[in-house]
Length: 196
Length: 225
Image (cartoon, rainbow over all chains, first blue to last red; front, side):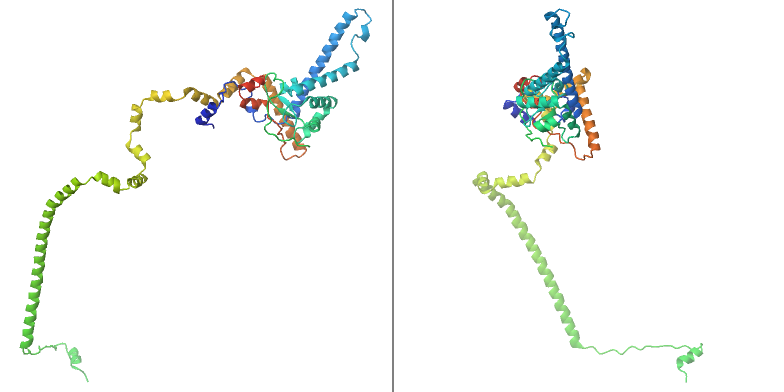
């Protein structure tokens, strides 16, 4: 407990009183910063994949509509009778979009929309959000080998295969709204992740 | 042969009478009588003289003591007054007496707090005190800020209002955390893992960092407060 004397000295040294309502519920304080479990991470990844899938569908819809503008004839235009790109092409597009989306999200704030909804954040071994290279490698790895997430279930430290290889962690970090680009939070615990 | 007593016992009518005859008077010795008379006279005279001397001594002693006391009762006060008039006792005490030692010794033997509690009516003093002047010196606003921060009033307000408003996102997150723990617990039981999972990660979460950073830092975090 801070005494009134200590409080006045702190204020005299420039500390400001805090009146803003915290957004973090008191019962969630204890596990903030802990590595997240499988369910939260799977749900977050699922949300992201669904968003990418919807984006791909939207892209297909836009291309389908554009095909009528570009080639209003009955032969279907450059994509043939279906007026939509080939499935393989769209799958490749979806994978690329997924990699791009996760790379940008993790490199800028450590969060994607799915992470934000589930209150998760990706950090590197220094406790900060990954750099572009690290985020890209992790995004590629997660996109190509999504089953690496299953390792979280049996891992003794809630780490996926990607986390172990690229030395990252996914932690509970509940924030409201969309965080600013780049984290100013300095690592305080400083403990290096342990290899499994 | 039988004795006289046996005969008497044999004949109850006969009595035996024992008669004692005093010795014959001795002739008085005049020398011893004279010596006894002289001795008694000398003892009586010595006792009388001793008693008389003691009585005289007590009488004289009483008379002398009474006279001396009466004289001292008159003379000593006069002499003492004369001496005191010629001395500055205050200076004398200040120079000759270690007052600090006396005061320290006296204070050590006293429980001043208990003395004040027993002897001083604190309520009466407070009743007479100017409370407004005291309050004017109290920093009310910093005190209020301190109370707000110490009881974490913003957190109380948030906890009370979040139950009414219903924070859907935190509910989903909370359910996710609960599911994580359930899955971990089940798997740990299956794989016979006895120690707890090591969940400590490097760095500090922004959600907690927002609590300790100042307003400017929180503003740059874009809504992490």
